[in-house]
Length: 432
Ligand SMILES: *Cc1c(COP(=O)(O)O)cnc(C)c1O
Image (cartoon, rainbow, N blue to C red):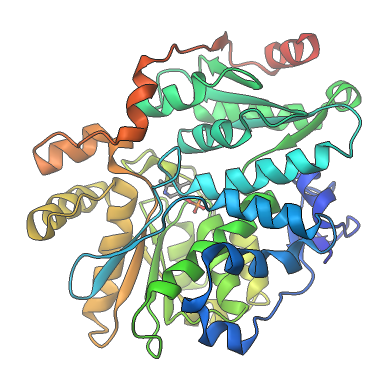
């Protein structure tokens, strides 16, 4: 399998090179040159497959011979080594809980897969690989956890001081070993700009093999298909597939679901659920695409004005507006409605949503109120304990802290405080 750049002026590469590079030299996103089609017998008998086996069969065509069979089976098995339950909440709506991984967010899946692939590739490579990543919260923890102890890979995470939640900060500053956290006295945009400059810098390129771990990397994007298949395995009425609502920011997650559908996974319809940062819902309504400046909201992992994976969504539908608009409906959900949804769903069904899941719930409920014969699943992308202030105010009580995060509170935060300047980052990278 080869990957071409969506900017069309860089050479096609295999999975290994696409993973190490992250982005193509012409700044385009990599995209598979063909989309593997599933055997119809696999689709019909999906419930009978072990999830490791299914995951291996889905991922293998995307990797070709870049990772041997036994190693790949091991990598996918470790990637998905936690539950992905579909929990029925109301008569029409079920939750696909993606927060049972080590950092309590769906980003664990992509980060675990990418880290293991990069660990495998670094064995064939001279010198270490440095992963550089800016985070507004969830990415940093998932990447830190996924890469912890991976030989041959150093991870440098930039996060805005005071702007991530306590659990998120502990997740990215208490790992030690090959994980370094840079606490930048600035905003998330500053962190992102510093990382961008680093990728363009000739001195750094001579001295280090730098790669990024955000969702444009194919090794983070592609494995996100897997849990859409796990959801269908658990879906009872196979003749009548679910409507799936995805809380969307950079659109990597929903794009992976659409990819699964193009390969043959039965899905009735997709819903792109956004907060007020709604460039894509606006495109779906009007046919006009305008990127915006991101506005802060309660569902802050989706505060993205210019969703980087949207070009991949377009590519899946051969850039035809009518084809995109037929498969996806978009919704814009305000903070007010997000808060009210958390309160309503808790009081009516006893289910605690996080702000991102609440956006997806509301969009799905709207759609289903006009499609009464359908049933749906929304993706609950993070555990509510990661957003305690918002959620506890709405449900009127403390969220029980999951067993797995308790030990975090006994660990010591270790970060390197840095000014929001590329010069500071460069000097640090060249001298450590
Ligand atoms: C990253 C994130 C999202 C958005 O996912 P995209 O793939 O960027 O669309 C949604 N919810 C949570 C909790 C996240 O961390």
